Length: 223
Image 1: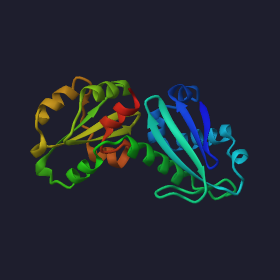
Image 2: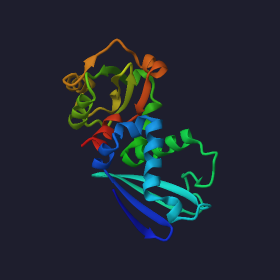
Image 3: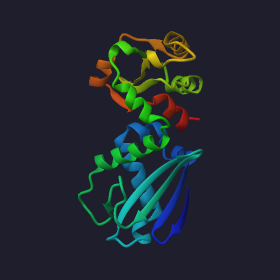
């Protein structure tokens, strides 16, 4: 892990994949496990010794950016920036769940490439979509599928349910070009299996790990 002062108000921390492994944390944990997010980033703050770098009363803002080898964490003092949370190191009423949601939101937003388009598609009627739920024997199969399947006209959601990973694929039929939905499903079945588990069951009883762009996010974080 490397640390440098960008200026008197900002510290840049480079967190490589090896740093995550040493702490027993994966990118998947940071995307889906609130407690892991909280513990990991507070351990980083302790190592950086923010209280020593800044005054104890300084408000702290975070920005998390993915890069090819891991994450870049920018820690700044001063007033809160737009769409960022303001944490005071002297405060005792920190909302850890809010912090976890904030970090996850940043990681997803910075890795997504075409979210605006999928937001528009989500409003389509059921008649315009074809949907399937697949289950993986192990998460490595999801990683391999993400390398092979590049979808411009679909929403992909990844769930964890009873310790099994499920991928919910929603295709927008009117927008498909090179391959039909059936051809894409045939490719997915090389890495996953059909399941009677429905999207409704996953939404009610499962845990949403990656939303809308699960394939893109997996490809980005698990190269």
